[in-house]
Image (tube, rainbow, N blue to C red; front, side, top):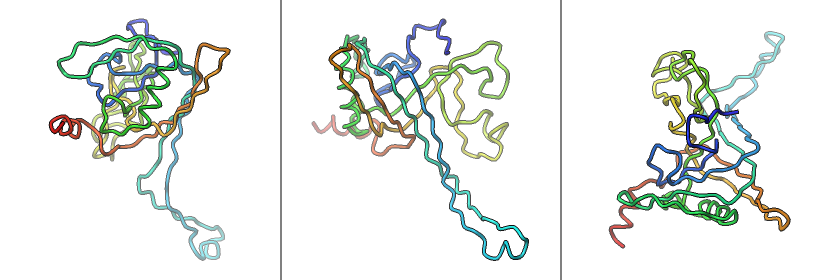
Length: 225
């Protein structure tokens, strides 16, 4: 279990909209009540059996070329209840807290999957899944566990510790507000049952650098509208 006793958070899984900019895990995020998380890392290495290797050594060999390719996905399942969500639609706007029904939240996520990265107030481009960490970003033992988002980064400064040999390593999370998993929602399915007030869902999130995305296209669109 994740210890959130020192925060005002009630969830450990969040979807961040492209417009998310604050360090509160509240504004322009969609919290999820998740019952299971499935993490999958699939390595892609071209390989080929070496001809005559068995004849020469008595043991056949396979040669593989590691080009640093892998696909990474996160599968979530859980349920949606009515909840409050904080939205902010411009830099100088004040935060607006809105109370949504369960089906309204489901509709919002379905709409986000149907949008593109250009629509930063619709599209989800980051998934945060918090877990307890006893070893910090530099590979030192923590005095007490800290909740951090799951990522595929490794501990250590650039070219140090686990990052020896990694020239362009990414930063390992330091706290719950660190960047989570960037990518896009591949699929989102919901089941609306008349006998329950909650809506069950499954979600597949794929790790990727998404184009187009960001504020440049939005700024241009706002300027010419």
